[in-house]
Length: 513
Image 1 (tube, rainbow, N blue to C red):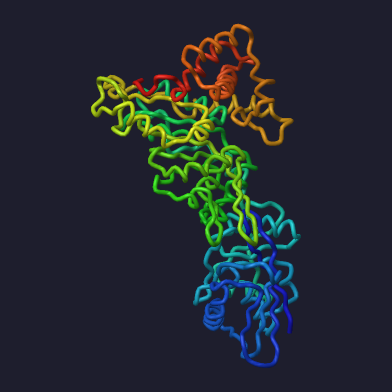
Image 2: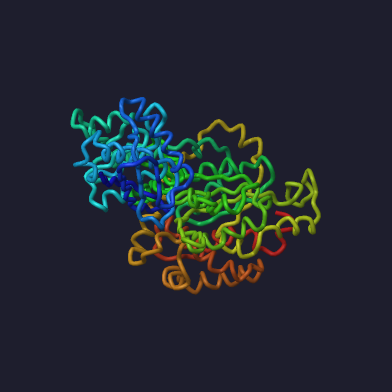
């Protein structure tokens, strides 16, 4: 008897429906075809034990299982459950009438219990698109799949539940989740709050500007000045995620198997890879391609602490994703694209010794040593960082101050208001949503300066000997500062503040701060 069961394979962040054809005929043998990997080939042992331990059996006949399309490689243990159901239906142990209406995925334990699988969210989206009546998956994945409207999700804990369901002796309870309410309730909570930070008001202001315009930022300061502490609090002042952003982020984390029982991810991601990270771990890839850190930081923050300690070739792979906001991984047989729209936040010491080159430095470094240290970061990468700011140690008076600082929630309100202005401004552009994404044409249109501001910028660039690449960055940041002020036009005061945030472009920076 021939039975067809439907599963799904995930490639990149999208799913493809897989038809599992099970044919049982006279003879002996177990034949699995259709480019399965070793995990799928080993499924016969798990399936045989799981069925036997739950009152069913693997028929002693010739079993041929084809996974179509046969030229597409299938990976992982998530096909255990659909293969097992196909065998039961083809051998007449359960009814096969309703099986084709459901998409089934899950890994079997030897006792018949179900283990969670990766990529359930894109699978649920595909099941809805294909018009399946429902999705039958492990209980641990049900909350994640229920995020998708328009398809019934059944979470099961043991294979006996689905056997009884297709025999008609029991019913399954669908998983329900009010994800709109979940998004509203939890997206405003934050673990790290700016109210805990003593002093550093100028750095807080700088991070507020970066959050409001989506600007990449680098913090330069000696050890203990609070660079990491400040960076960890940046996600808390970013605007709440929209439902579209939450679904995009959850889909990537689902493919990487990092959602677990969280359901919808509503907190903006904060990823902080160690400086020993490889290029592949950062951008994604591998024998079985997986999203890298830059994709896991999609719609959130990628924090690179001690930037010059990263290998130069690792940092260079960031250039294209920072520009295109996606990363493409090419292999001989396929090409996968992962979204990677993130804010880059980097930190570094000003010298190998850790301190600025001045008379008060605990450990002095020569200008040559400082130049060599800074030279580990390429110009093209620095060119993609809008804001450079120096972080000085907090004086004792500030540390001992018992008054509360401004909270992240208060800062976030201003940031959200500025982002709303930008959403309206760029609504006719498909790929531009905030100021940092502006191209030359948008800069000319939305960052036009009056004669006074233009003269001031010209004078500042000549006196401070700012590089040409700083010009567009200054205008973008000035536009964001104007948005925070609620100003339609960019004035000289906005330009003046933006100029302060180009430390690494200033001639003479290496001689001290």
